[in-house]
Length: 85
Figure (tube, rainbow, N blue to C red):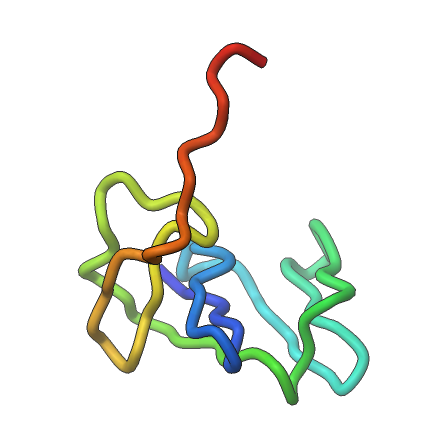
């Protein structure tokens, strides 16, 4: 897996399959080639892309965990989404 982590918070925003291309520019991050989606609020200066992640938490959800190097930690500010809709 690959991750996209916001530098300032260390929050893991995305987990993406190894075979999917990720391109970070000064303006945004493009996922896929051809593009599957573009992340407009993250870019090469405020996010880190890490490849070959093998230890992602089994219950991973965007923003639920922080990643520092290869060490995962729970986000203390995480609140489970309301299941009532």
